[in-house]
Amino acid sequence: MVKRLTCILLLAAGSAAACEPAPPARLDIDANSYYSDKHHSVVDPVLRARNIAATRPIEDFLSQVARDANGQGDAACALAWLGSWAGQNAMLGKMSSEQAYYVRKWTLGGMALNYARIQRQATPAQRALIEGWFKALADATIAHSDAKKGGRNNHYYWEGLAVTAVGGVTGEARYLDWGRKVLNHALGQMEADGALPAEMERAGKALHYQVYAATPLALMASILDVHDARLDTLVAFTVAASADPSGIARRTGFEQEPVGSREVTVFYNRHEGRPPVAGKALWQPRLGGALDVPNPLEHLK
Image (cartoon, rainbow, N blue to C red; front, side, top):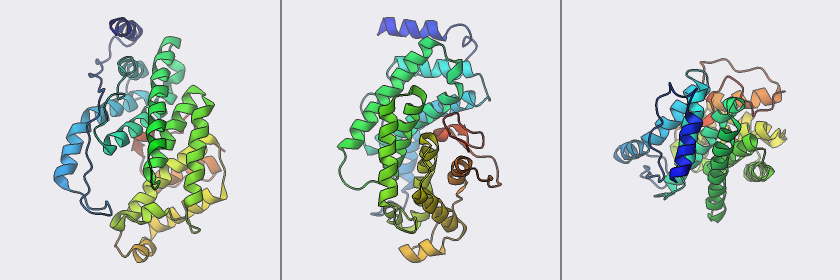
């Protein structure tokens, strides 16, 4: 371990000398669920606050990497931070709960998508270190996902995005193939009108989770360069429901929280060669930072 850390310090020297040092790596992830009803639609504020506090170091790490990778800082700093956590096998320790696995896959997807923006600036040694870590995390994500029993919902799709993004930056076909399996499963279980059944079970958050589930699917389709009429139906339903939630309200028996759909259409429209939807700039570290700036992994038409 000492030798490995020494190598990391040498890799980070030079261009990264002016960067803030990376925070201590989080080997284990402690996180908790925060919904209080059977539909997982009502947030318990105390549990939510506890989860935010526990996971903030990981969220802050990803946010800073995203800022540096998207030109708000120095790309060399993003690479140094990723190399630091890679060398310490961050997030490959104990997961305290299913929520901890969720945090890991969201963070992995975000790191890989942000890394794609600066991959060409990485040295061969940095690429080997960081990409090797990503593959270890992707393997852990696949192992946990494949071992789970029961229904598949938005969490499965976000796992698919994380693994697909790792496939995109490493060129490893097995990760791209696994992501394609997830995408096909999602589109196969979709209802004829484009609704995702597991998300329709979320009571007053059904629309929220329809959008949340469609977003990684749209980006996966672009990374994998998949054009599918079923995805067209999914996006059309999601956009229409976002504009007028009354249909989902009647379907579920619950009034819906309003939510926009641009995080879906920004990826879908670029991939399908359609004009962008106007709106304020979108920023999401888990999706690669600046969503309005195409990610190198996307296939643009």
